[in-house]
Amino acid sequence: MATSYFTASSVDGFIADPEATLSWLLSRDIDPDGPMAYQRFMDRVGAVVMGATTYRWVLDHEPGAWPYGVPTWVFAHGDVPRVDGADLRVVQGDVSAHHAAMAEAAGDRDVWVVGGGDLAGQFADAGLLDELWVQYAPVALGAGAPLLPRRVELRLEEVARNRDFACARYTVVRPTGAPA
Ligand SMILES: NC(=O)c1ccc[n+]([C@@H]2O[C@H](COP(=O)([O-])OP(=O)(O)OC[C@H]3O[C@@H](n4cnc5c(N)ncnc54)[C@H](OP(=O)(O)O)[C@@H]3O)[C@@H](O)[C@H]2O)c1
Image (cartoon, rainbow, N blue to C red; front, side, top):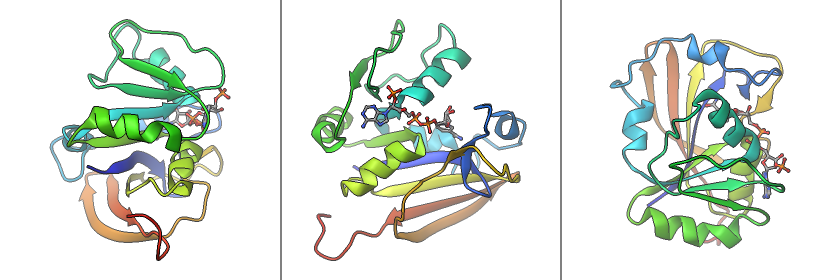
């Protein structure tokens, strides 16, 4: 079981544009059955975690149809709207206080950190992020929500082209002596 941050990004490292729209992404061509595509990644996922902004984006863009059939953790300081059919835990604070419960819910499957970038960084800071998967869309945005606003050492494990996207999978290199 791994804790993996899987996301799409512009080539200059933004996962949303300044207006928090994804038109720059959703207009691109990808083969859902092709290499390193979302569906194959999702087949391995047993728990999902996201920040409050991403959660609200999902609610706004998939009204009435919660897309994830696995337990989902939402990090938020305040209240967030609830949605029928979602197995939700709304939590806050130190990600390491919640990771064991996520891993237990996921069982032998993976924990997917959906985003945003700072939340993924919090998992990396805590030594709890194992993998980064990025699907790079062929566009530079200049500004927006950052992919991973931290210094995190990575090892490139896999690259593939999927139509418009350059897809890469990295493992997080932990400092010597850090927990595996
Ligand atoms: N390209 C893609 O595939 C992709 C993937 C994911 C997301 N996105 C987009 O990227 C953007 C990401 O937004 P974002 O940068 O604002 O990140 P986010 O992680 O979605 O949301 C950040 C918010 O999460 C809450 N939060 C984060 N860590 C917390 C903690 N430890 N404890 C309590 N609350 C915590 C805070 O909310 P409050 O303090 O407000 O409660 C914080 O303001 C969104 O527009 C999203 O739709 C794109």
